[in-house]
Image (tube, rainbow, N blue to C red):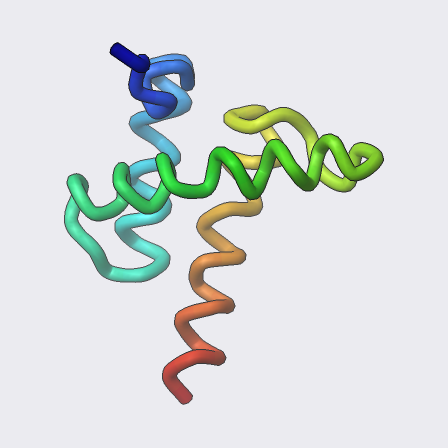
Length: 78
């Protein structure tokens, strides 16, 4: 059985990230966790492409992901 990638984020950071995603795009906790979980392959690919981002779950990820999601929501739903 695969581990849940959200569980790989330290508890305090995970709580803050989930709250930030909930606030940024107005979703509930379960949805925020699902969205966060789904970003792992993309983020890892960006890291492998020459360090375009820091590690998945790292400080850059936790800061940028809510902003990226907010931007996507705003531009996809003008």
